[in-house]
Image (tube, rainbow, N blue to C red; front, side, top):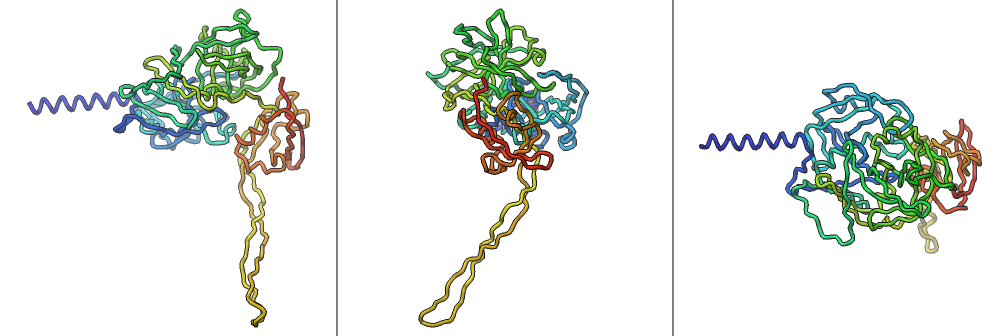
Length: 446
């Protein structure tokens, strides 16, 4: 009898191990864990441990399997095995990219662990999002984490809460909206409405937390989804298969059930950049980070619902880059800085009743060389204030309004270009070894 009981217990343990190998499970007493994230350019960047190595990943609801970039730099460290060569196709006008499909990888996000995770390791060294975000980013992760756990995204306080579904308890929330999810190729879609030319249009959108824009719409004359006359051509971002270009504009309003956002930003990507995205014929576009961050969200893939509650970002005004400049981190520069050494000493004069010892301060001005981040112009909108002033792609920004650029993060520096119309911007740049100064005023892009 004892042997039979031991066999049952052993069988139960083996089944549990097998179950944990194929799913993410939070392995602690609470069966729930908080994971802090960085919000960079409306993108969520989280720590992900792969085969014992901690990396930084974008949390992307629009990706079905984890993808690692800069494969040639990390392959040896991660000890990737069980591989086969495949080709991936994504947004952009370029060709498919070569990748390795790997199995049996150990993934850990906080206390959530999966022992048998597939991943795709991309060969192309040019697929690197780190310069645009100003911080190392090694890959993207999405569906596998969301399908196994209840995932709360608290944009207000920059943390995820991961909970095993059987332990999650919903709280009453009168100010929340619960919206049904629909899945296609393991990606979540949501029904919404837009108002264009004072006409409400029902739309189906991919929820894309891996996009930094507000809203992408695919132009469709039959539905009335067409770009406004007040629009401008622009670079929209990088996809797996190259750069994406299109038009930017505004819509009258955007609706998620009772939630309404007025004068929301919208982008209309060129049809040549979104051929893969149009495989799902019912899809009308994407809902991305600049709108998603305005809610705290609870994703429950197993029940096919998402719960939304407005947060402190909800009333932020929608704005555009009014300079026409897109920046990226371009390595480091050697900067000569003043290093003032303050020396304290005694000035000892004659000792008598009228004189006493006095202190003296000597400032010894010296210089030191320091490595500081360098920021370069990587995109320049045609006809923009910056282009008309004479700035060019590859210019290195040395200072903005007489303040050294290295005193700012990439996000802080970029935010300067979203200022009020008429704000004067003075840039000192390095171009081919020469220092040149340019000035321009921020303008409405349309």
